[in-house]
Image (cartoon, rainbow, N blue to C red; front, side, top):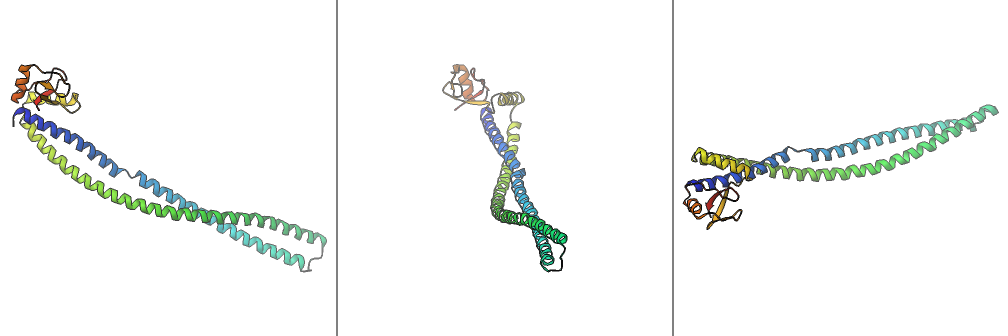
Amino acid sequence: MSLIQTLCRLQAVDQEWDEKGRRFQLVRQRLADQSELEKRRQVQENLQKQLSRVRTALQDAELRMSGLQQKIATVENELYSGRTTSPRELANLQQEREMHLRHLSETEDEVLMGLTQTEELEEAVAKGAQELDRFEKAWADEREQLRAQYRELGARLQQLKSEREALRATVGRAELGLYDELRKSKGGQPLSPMKGSMCQTCRVTVPSNKAQLAQSGETLVCCEGCGRILYPE
């Protein structure tokens, strides 16, 4: 290959290297990012914990309700048994019964609320488990695709690295320095095609003597407009 052909190929390799490198980094970042999966799992775990707390509170309320019912039954048995005849003791028993009945009413409301909350949370947990299962399966499929892309990109980058090093080894230090400087300052495009005597990047017409040199492919000629190295299209 002529010098200009070598640089054209090097530019193509470098551009693919840059593009594949960006994709490689993006895929690696996506593989490392577990935040969405962890967030969904945490939401489901929080629902489970909330359901467990509500169930525990419901069991406690049901136990209190059962205890109050037993106390009321004991007081009523004593109140209506005829064994207690003292008006004062009877009044105390009646007050105790009324107090237990108030507490029982409050506890029954608590149990009803707990039953409603438990039912709602059980539905939410079941629905969440199904959604999480679907997400985890889709996540696993995506991970497999990303890993395949990661391996493919990594292999291609190794090929490009080898070709890039081989190409650079055939270019002189001065020419390579110019190429690298332009590649950095021109957004990764140090070369520009020339059609006839016109630069196809900036549309500036190149003097005929420079155009002829560029056509030879062995002397580097830079466009007077954009400054890129010219090569015949």
